[in-house]
Structure formats: C-alpha cells, structure tokens
Image 1 (tube, rainbow, N blue to C red):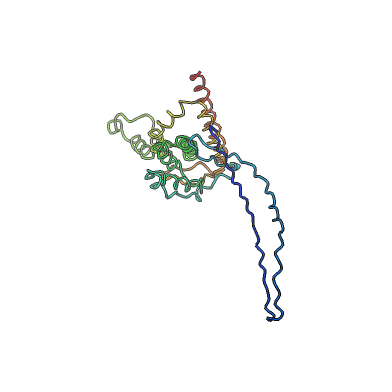
Image 2 (image 1 turned 90 degrees about the horizontal axis):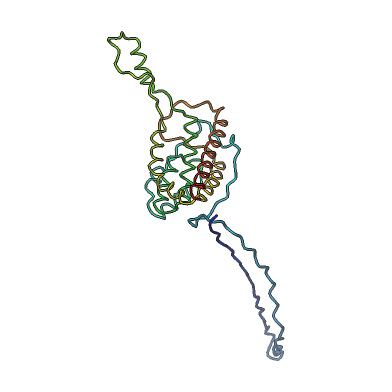
Length: 276
C-alpha cells in the first residue's frame, strides 16, 4: 500500500476510592471527639502496559484496505434458480456526493456477492467522478472479471429470429427467397449493453492506472482478493440466453479467473517496459 496510517488507542482508567468517616450519637455525656485523620500515602496506581500500535493499511486514496477470506470455487457458486436480482442499481447510478457514495460502499461491502457487474460499473464511475481512483479501479476490474464469467456461463448464441428466418427462406424457391441473406445467422449477445457501459466509463480509470504500473500491480492483488472471497449470488438484470449446465460452472470460473489475471499481468509487464 502507498501509505500507512498508524492507529493506536491507549485507554488508561484509574479509579480513586474515597473513604467516608461516620460518627454515631450515643448521648451528650458519652460524646467523644473524632480521632485525627491518619496521613497515609496514596496507593500507587497500577501501571498499565502501553498498547502496541497496529498498522492499518490504506489505499492510495486513504481508504482502509479490508481483509477478505477466500472461498473455494464450489462454495462461491450459486445455482441459477437461487440467484437474485440486486435492487440498488438506481442508488448506484444516482450517488453523486461523498455521503451517498459512502453509504453505497457500505451497502456493497455488506453483501458483496449480491452486486452484479452492472452495479459495480456504476459505482466505479461515481467513485472516479469524486477522484477516488483506487477504489474505482477495484470495482471496475472486479466488474470486468465477473462480466467475463457471465459471458462464459450465459454465452452468446445465434439469434433465434435469424435462425427461424433462414429456415423459412431455405424452403422457398430461388425466386422467392430473400436476397442478400447472410451466410451465417447473427449472434445474440445478452451482455452487449453492459460491455458497452464498461467501455464508456473505463477511460478515466484506465488512464489513471497507465500513469503508474505499480497501480495495476496493486489493483490485480485487490481484485483477486475481493473476487475470491465474494460468492456469485447475483442475477444479471437483463435477458439471458440458456445457461451452461451448472455442473460446468466451477471449471468455467477457474478458467475465467486464470485468463483474466494472465491478461492483466501481461498488460502490467507491457506497461512497465514502456515506462522505463
């Protein structure tokens, strides 16, 4: 981490007890004067050992770096029928001030696996707009990784309408067939809209990373930690194609992660050579 913040809270509690002296009334003839108070030295307060300081790592934008616990791939996956939509896309799109963004981050971090790539991209844009670039990069590239996995488990398919039109056309005589029909059916990609959104908002974040190869190295580490510790429990908020069988998702996830981080590492190496 670029900077460290030393956090130490030393609490010393001392308790002083006061003793009360009481006198009893027996009668005027038996009244006795109070004995003079004895001057005794005050008890020495017990020494409290000084607490050791704990270094709390900070991001470049001075936000805390949380510690995550990795999940095995099989524990990170949720069967298609149990996936749920995230109902805070509007909140992510409308977060324009520091208070809104901080509340949004708390919402995300309280249930990280529930946030789809769409939400992560919108949050990263809000963070980048407030110049909180390191956290913006984290959410942006986590969104990219998870979108890649969505493409793998709900892959693009030939457009069903196009297939139907081609079948109908094949049964017609040459003079009745539609002219200039493409040789192959068009591909329906349900993720195209989200991919376009990522391309639109990624410019400032990527530009920030390009200024310093160390930023990419740190981002890769943070993305890996975040992703491996958060389940894939979200349901994308758009029409999907037929899913690859759930039994194959584990291999798809492992392969998607390996490919993604290999590409990120290659990009980092290229950046490092350019900056020399």
